[in-house]
Image 1 (cartoon, rainbow, N blue to C red):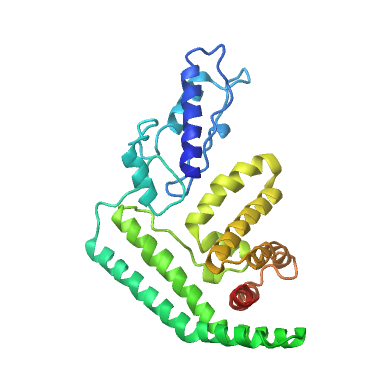
Image 2 (image 1 turned 90 degrees about the horizontal axis):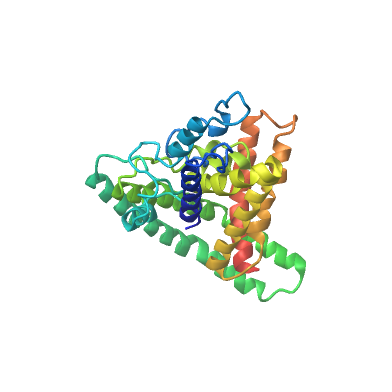
Length: 319
C-alpha cells in the first residue's frame, strides 16, 4: 500500500509540473526527479544528469520530455493516470513484488504444468516442515521448558539453554532452508505464473555471502528492492549513505521483531538485537585484516547463521 500510494503520489506531482509548464513564467524549472527503479526493468539515465541550457537553467523542451518519460512505463504501454483502475490495483496485489510500477514485464501465458508443479511443491514442503517441527523441534522445546521450571540457579538455566540450542542446530537450519524454498521458489513462483510475471529473480546466491550486507541484498530480492527504493534511496539524499544504511537496517529489524512477536506472542527484542549487530560485524569483516578472505568470511557467515537461528528461536520460546 505504501509503494502504491507513494509512487502514484509522485506521478501526480510530476503530471502537475508538466501541466504547469504551459505557463513557463510561473512554473518550476527544477530538473525532473526520476523515481528509483524497482529492478524489474533496466534502469535509465537519471534526468538530473542530462545537459542543461547555456543560460544555466533546464531547457523547457527537455524538461517536458523528462517529465513525460517519467509518466510513462519503460515499455511504453501504460501512462499515468490511466493506470488508476481497479484491475491495475488487483493485478499489483497479486504480482510477487512489493514495489509498484506502471507496468511489469510479462510472459506470453500461464504454463499450467509449471503452476501445478509449484502448487504441489508448496504442500509437499509444508508437510516436511510439519514433520520436522513435530519430530525434532517440539520434543526438545517441551523437555527443556519442563526442566527450566525445576531449576533456580543461573548456571543450570544456561546449561539447559545451551543443550537445547545444540540439539536444535540442525533442525532449525533445515526449517530455515525449507521456509526459504517454499516462499521464494514455489509460492512466489506460483503467483508469478498465475499473473504471467516475467521477473522471477526472487533471490540470488546468498549461500556464497561473505558479509551480512551481501546476504540482506541477495536472500530476499522483493524486500530488498522495497527497502532500497522506499527507505534507503528516499533517505540518502537527506542524511547521507551511512545513516541511510543504519535507518534501513533499523526499520528492517523492527519488522523482523514484529514478525517474531506475532509468531511467539512475545516481545523480547532478540531478533532486533541480532539484526542490528550485523552492522558492526560488517564493519569488522571489511577491515584490511579480514576483507578479501572470502572463504573465511563465508565460513563465519554460515557458523553465525546456524548458531544464530537456533539460539534466537530457543530464547524466544524458552525465555
